[in-house]
Image 1 (cartoon, rainbow, N blue to C red):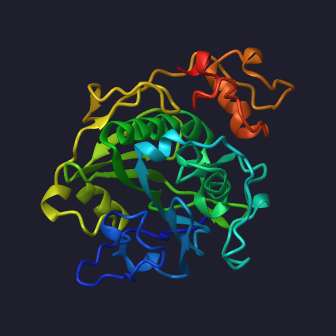
Image 2: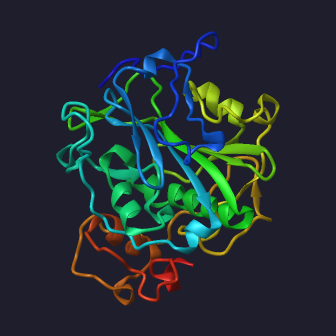
Amino acid sequence: MVKYLFVIVILTSSLMSAPTKCGGGSYFGGEAPDILNPKLTPKTKELCYSSFAIMHSGVSRTPLWAGEHLTKAGLSSHSERTNDFHAEEKLASDERAELKDYARSGFDRGHMAPSADMPNEKAQHESFSLANMIPQNQENNRGIWAKIEGATRNLAKDSGEIYIVSGPIFIGSNLQRIGGRVLVPAKIYKAIFDPSTGQGAAYLVDNSQGADYEVVSIAKIEEITGIRLFPKMSATSKQTAMKLPATNGSNFGGRSDRNALATKPYKVPAASVTVSAQCGSKRICREMNSCEEAMFYLNTCGISSLDGNHDGIPCSKLCK
């Protein structure tokens, strides 16, 4: 346990920031987020990948954020999931997460830049770096968070392009570590900026069981995180949360539902089945009893793909 580590104290008088080394393609206006809270700066390192960028913390051994520029064209060339989780060799061994840290921890290796956003095999492989992972509650990762990721992809398809910053929030009096090394966040956010309207908002969830979430303004999420997420976004626009798609569509980027808008916490119905926490011999969709079971096998049991008809949705008859 860690006491009072990363409690947010906003210091607006000074910005702990540096120009991005990643070329700016993952960030709106080419400018990476600014760290406003100096408690977040020790052992930080920017990591540049082909389709996303990360600010990694060697203290938490997780990303502080992952930045993406998500486009309709990029999503149309989505590559199949690889599940090749690996430690990040660009990081010092004492500052990075290892596979053994997550083993038997009870937590999922939760992507901040989702694998389903990745346009090609290289980007897929990069997205499975543990530098892109947080210890995430299993139900959260496979339930409400997967739905939020799908709703975000739908918004990118409808708008043409959006910018995203996703990350963990380490607040509270007691923070757990897995493997004695990797900090478990209390909350998770996905902040979205739509350049076509100049507006933005963020999904905010607890890193716990349940299906509740909030849609909050960019100003609010910046206050909570101690990070200025979109430096080029106007201060006025940050004060108001734009309407974001509700998460009652497909978990994995199915039919768009922009008319179903969430401006307050929304509760997704509980899963109708209980999934065994053990991997069996099932390998194809027709052997699965539910979408929840299919996602358990895909995320946990080493199955590389359940998208036999190549429509971008694993076990689409179950999961649409």
